[in-house]
Length: 220
Ligand SMILES: *[C@@H]1O[C@H](CO)[C@@H](O)[C@H](O)[C@H]1NC(C)=O
Ligand SMILES: *[C@@H]1O[C@H](CO)[C@@H](O)[C@H](O)[C@H]1NC(C)=O
Ligand SMILES: *[C@@H]1O[C@H](CO)[C@@H](O)[C@H](O)[C@H]1NC(C)=O
Image (cartoon, rainbow, N blue to C red; front, side, top):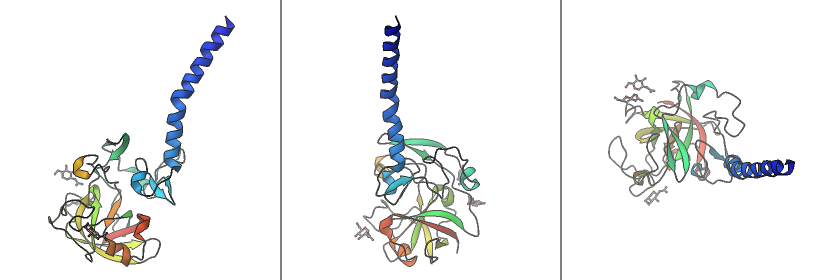
C-alpha cells in the first residue's frame, strides 16, 4: 500500500518537475540569456553587456524578482494588450512614460531613415525618406502623440557623454502594432524609445553598434 502511494507520489513529482522546470529555466535564461540586440530579449527586457536584463528606464523588475514596485515614472503607463511574435509575448502600449519638459528619460536606438533602410517605408509625418546626414528621430507611440510632435525639434542629451543633439521628429516608433509582415515580424516598439539616425548618435559621441543608450530629451 505504502509503496503504491509513494510510486504515485514519485510519478507526480517527476511530472511536476518535467512540466515546470523547463519553463522556469527558460524564464531565468531569458533574463540572463545572451543577446546582441534588444530584439534578442524577451518582452521589455534590454540587452546590457551581452545579457538580457531589466530596462532601468522602464523600471521593471522582471529579472530581479518582481517584488519591488516599479518607480513612478512608468507607473501610470500600463500595457493595453500584448502581441505574440514567434511564441514570445510582447506588451503593447498606447502611452509612454510621462513627458517631463525639463528632460524625459528615454532609450536611444538606431534607425536608418533612407530608402531601403531598416525603417521600412517613408516616415509617417511627411511620407518622405530622410537620408544621412539628416538628424531625425521616431518617437514611441505615446510620445509621438497622434503626430502632434511631427516636424518639431527635440534636444537629446546623452547621460553618458553629456553631449547634445537637436533632431527633427519625422516618424512614430509603433508601440501598438508589430509581429506582422508590415513590420517585418518585429515586435511592437517599447514605449520609451527615441529611435534616431546615425548622425544623432555621432553627434552625441555614442557608438551605435551598442544598439541602445540612455538619454534624456526635451523640446528644442
Ligand atoms: C541605410 O540603408 C541604405 C539602403 O539600404 C544603405 O545604402 C545605407 O548604407 C544605410 N545607412 C547606414 C548608416 O547604415
Ligand atoms: C490619439 O487620438 C485618438 C482618437 O482621436 C485618441 O483616442 C487617443 O487617446 C489619442 N492618443 C494620444 C496619445 O493622445
Ligand atoms: C498630446 O498633445 C496634446 C495636444 O495636441 C497635448 O495637450 C497633450 O499634453 C499631449 N500629450 C502628451 C502625452 O504629450
